[in-house]
Length: 425
Image (cartoon, rainbow, N blue to C red; front, side, top):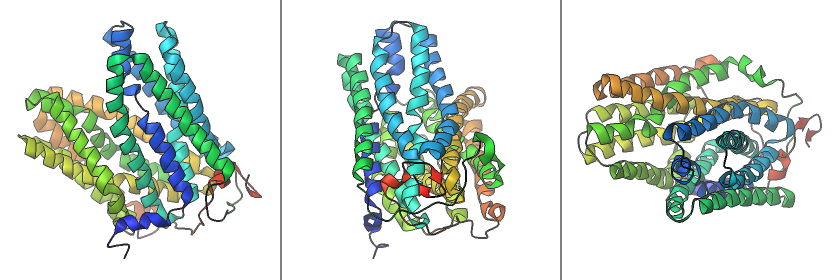
């Protein structure tokens, strides 16, 4: 019956996951400053565009190094505590930003903002990993992605109206929603809102930040995943440039295509993931990579609005299959005592792909044109697909699935501390 209505599968998720869903939705719905940071610095602060761009670069550097640090802290002091501190402190940092007048001070606080705000992602992925057993992780991660996309469809839109009236209001709403999300998460843990029994993790220590890189499964997966992830980020890199400069479309068309992607994720991803959650990773990951590459590769043949929309539909299906599966795979190969570290390096791969992908795509588009770029994206995604199809052999398991160790679901309060001989503290 669940197969006929995949949405029903969400009913089996523990209450704690829905708490994380609500927290993520609140946080993302208030994400307003980052999309308008350059406009704020150039218009309100009167800075040159180059200086405003440097602020984004500083944020990107902070985001790049935060993943492993957040993962390490999640293993040492508890992923839930890291997520709480991330929301509360980053909210306070955002509230301070509009009162800074010195460019140097803005850069320092922006870097601090990246360190605190971007710590939330690996921490919350670790929390979800701890809360559900392996068979439920794909739907659980898809549910969190639903919260992200719902929030991001609201935040920038509302932020645009606020920016027209007051940039200070933009910072105020962003900071306060982040703090509110942190308070909700803190209250949920203290009230022990989750159902389900607590479980004890195996005895072990988190080790150094680099200790997880000794796992060849993780290294192989991240190396195989990076090319298609760089292709995926062309949605924010070469794609808008191609639509406007090569196809002569307006910026509004790109906005509509971005909205098409978001609406599809909101309406389809959770039931699609629930319906395909039984697929082995060695099937889902390559299929997602091929669809992602096919969507962007087909951009070379798209000329009108319908053609471009069709390419977006194809790569969005790739995204909806690929990304929840990738997160679930990392969760399943991670030892319980080092889940934070694994999620930290996984998160860092996203930051690295976002740093390299749009820049490289724009450079290829400028030098070689669409005839080189878009077939190149398909080839790059196909490389990832071929490598990801081998993860079963790399893991020593022919089906390429995670261990599925049969962990019981855990209450949200049970992931608030480090792992010790006596279980979660």
